[in-house]
Image: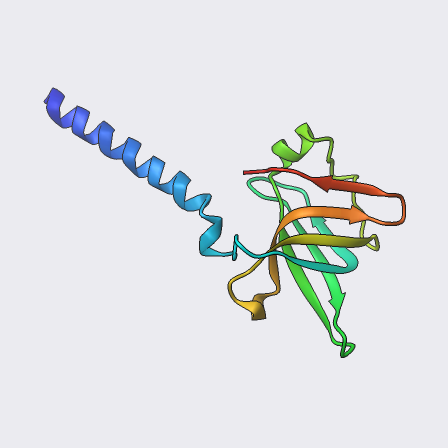
Length: 128
């Protein structure tokens, strides 16, 4: 009986550990060995856990606009780095550097650095 309980408990621990690893496998979604830069107008700042997102309208050289989804750290981590839900507002012009998504059609990025040229505010850090 104790052996079964111990085996079941070990199974739960292993399963939870695999889920945590899978959740933080950014390399499955992003090219973590590449960096790109985009600039555009902030449409939305979703300040939440487990990860915050920015949605930015980016206009390319041909004049076409695409909405980018930019993954950031969670609200708890960002708060500890002095980023709050009031830090960024729709309409802000931002320049973002990060890892591009594996599917270019998705217009996704994992943020590494962001700046708002209008007042010089910038963030660059870790959120894993």
